[in-house]
Length: 214
Ligand SMILES: CCCCCCCC(=O)SCCNC(=O)CCNC(=O)[C@H](O)C(C)(C)COP(=O)(O)OP(=O)(O)OC[C@H]1O[C@@H](n2cnc3c(N)ncnc32)[C@H](O)[C@@H]1OP(=O)(O)O
Image (cartoon, rainbow, N blue to C red; front, side, top):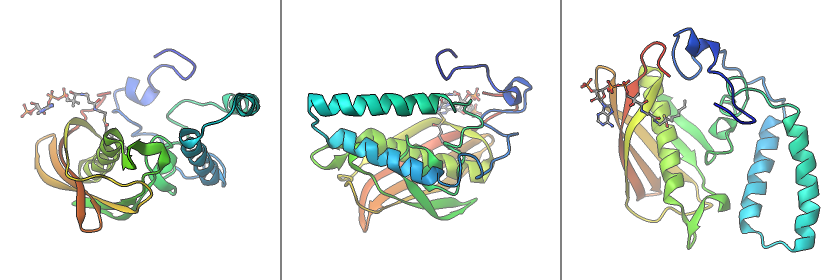
């Protein structure tokens, strides 16, 4: 991998211990006590950037501030395995700005129930959530359900049926559960609902990674 954030695979993978971050301690200590506030402010920025129609003058002002902020963040950039984004399990969506913020209402080996809220950033059109973000949320939560049931897995396929429009700025419920398992294969199902109305349902296959598999 090349680029500003690139680098070799972590030692855990190179040593054949398995993909993702099986040997690295998951801690909620990284990123500072106000990391959640930082992430929430970034989310608000993303929402407002999507909603804004700035002037040239305002862009100039914002650009100079953003460049200064990006320089600050570049100074504290680390590799993916130790970055708090994705491992702060005390925060919505593990502190990962890529994901729509969700929190678990229930989780276990049989399945998980999460509540989530899409925002202006996730707009597809006409006040509806972009279908790709629905897929992102479903893949994430099904992946966590597969992980709780089996261990470290990757998505082999994911089929989504968009049953009705998914609204922005609404508390939704996402349920994912194990349907059946066959060897390394875990078949899951999921539903995304706005109250009694199903917005989407999905089925997916997750494969348990072999030792050393990326
Ligand atoms: C904690 C964070 C949660 C986040 C969750 C997010 C999860 C993700 O998004 S992961 C990223 C997206 N997924 C990927 O990038 C995966 C890319 N693909 C791969 O890496 C590989 O193809 C992988 C791992 C899925 C399977 O490869 P491999 O380990 O070699 O297994 P392989 O032998 O091909 O298949 C195992 C079994 O699954 C079956 N299988 C594999 N893929 C498929 C498929 N697409 N459809 C149907 N069956 C399949 C095979 O037929 C085989 O079945 P059987 O054992 O009965 O012969």
